[in-house]
Image (cartoon, rainbow, N blue to C red):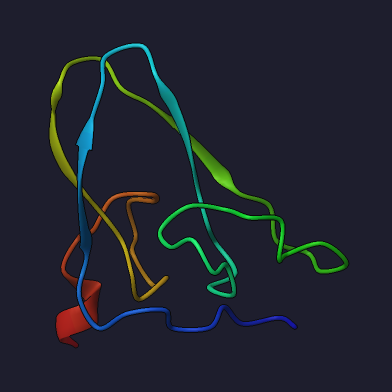
Length: 78
C-alpha cells in the first residue's frame, strides 16, 4: 500500500486535552478513526503524533490528503 485510504470526506472534530498525545492514522485503514489502531503494520505508513497544548476542539484530517498533518486544511473539498 503506497497511497492512504480515504477514511472520510470530512474532518473529525475532537475535543483534545492539554498535555495529552494523540496518534493520527495516516494510512486510513484504522477502525478507530481518526486515530491509529496499528492497521498500518507491514506498510510504509507511520502515525503522526499530535500533542495538545490547550483544551480545545481540533479537526483531524479524514481524507488523508492534508498538507498540514494531522489537522485538516480543507483538502477534502478538492
